[in-house]
Length: 376
Image (cartoon, rainbow, N blue to C red; front, top):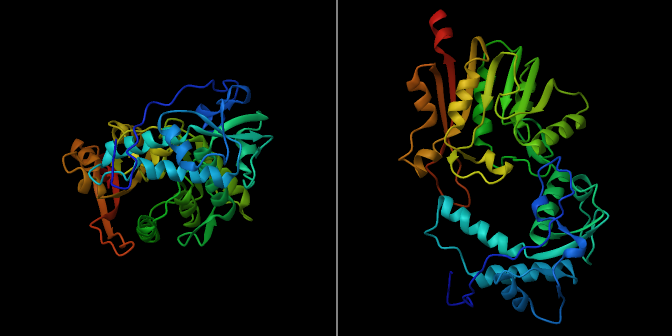
């Protein structure tokens, strides 16, 4: 429990259990685990007869509530919940910080809103086209308002697009797809790619996310770019962006855990891995946090998929060293194993944001196999 002089000092109990909808075929990652059958929703209706603080206190005690008022009133209740729980302590970092944020989101998920025939069925709610894509087989159900808010933001991002100067056009990341906001690492990769003089027959983009590196590779003249990602939403996102192009780039995209479905060797294997060691809770986390064996599996698989004189290129950052100097550096550890040799290591400082300087640098690591280096 976090208490401040401006906080009521609420305690929080585990949220109660409702009957989820179990008949939904899950093709894409979405908040299906919190999809609640229409007839089993919470008994307590929320309207303006009580102030937002009243309902926020009940959420903090783990109750489920049905929002029958406006979308804006529901947002007021969630604001009151965040205020009542107080600020998150500055002493929390890493996994404890993520656990506290997860705890708060679980409490906020107790406020349910009705969805009927692809639309949020309360006044003041904007249309969300994603609801039809994700839940086309379910006519009526309830979802937590926090999930509706996330879907609304993702829907807007998908429709408006995210411009990338390294491409000269925008991409339209679909729901549940990682899309970088900062671009220093993309710019540094573009600098290296513009000077690359090797073969350009085939390239693989591992963990493609929204596909920005795959599009950069195609723009650089690679004849065949294969983009893979363990997250099916990312694969769908790239497919939709490919369909938007007037002249379709030479990109093929598939769902794959690292390189497990790839059989044909490549001239270039590009990997923008997660930069921080941590717990992976959902597909989006796989773009941010890595588990113990991720890099070992990647290098095991890529070592057998390089053409002679092929290169492995990792887009990385020194943020791991800054945050966890006690952990071994995963790329340096692989170099010590002796299967690869380092060709090039480029760095670039990350620009200050909001006037706050940082010691972070983005990095490009270019590796060759020992056998190819000996032959050369």
